[in-house]
Image 1 (cartoon, each protein chain N blue to C red):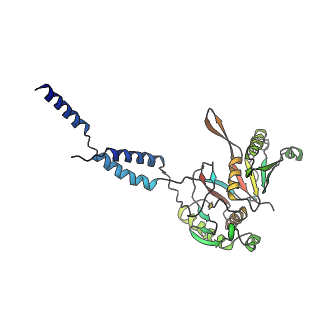
Image 2: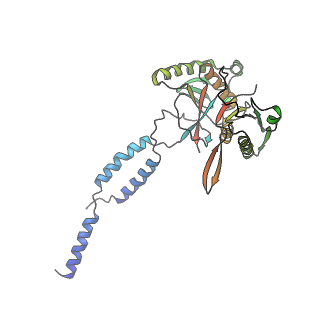
Image 3: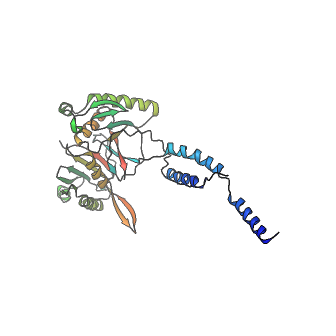
Length: 176
Length: 145
């Protein structure tokens, strides 16, 4: 066998190895893709649990030595009025927590709301309930933003986003 | 002459990876109503089924059936607002809840998908109507951020 023939035969054998039979892989893909297309979620939805205020005859399950407050957010067209109510705190302590958050540009100053809620949570750790009382003309989108802000605080640690729960129990009501 | 499948295989691999990422194993039993724009939220709660209520800018649907026509801007009639409930919504939620309880043994929850521009006055009246039907707990459907 001459040198050229030997080279050609090596090239031929290399070509044979390179020609992998892709038909079974294609069959697998053709089966998998329609299945995944059916089960794919292109629109990701989530839910915010909430309730209306209700009156119960039962006794509160909160331990008596735990001082907790319920945050009330009165949402009006141009401001949010934050007040607190509690079964254990006196009027003076509650009035210290009162705050008015004005509208900043097109939306509310949610950073200020977060700071105020973080402060309340620091002082009264067992508090977890927020009652949101929006005015009649407040759009649903703005209410969701306020609920997001009052539910948790988002912050970054070493470029990783973390969350800290604030007031996860949401009650939607209406000022009478 | 063999068929060149390499580029086709590349394309399939990309599609497969994309679909596997967006694969949803959970059966949510939820259909988003057309013409409705949900508000965006940072919440990450798992979806829970219940009585489905969709509120578009023009009408209220319970389990996909229209039960109440809204006024311009998604508002409710003053007479209904003063009454504190919408009778047709109370009836529809009550019927749907009983059916859900019997067939699926579900919790008493109304899943509300409402348009992001809907005024609170309407949303609150619908929640009150559901409460008149005996359901006090709600899940507000939002688009994940």
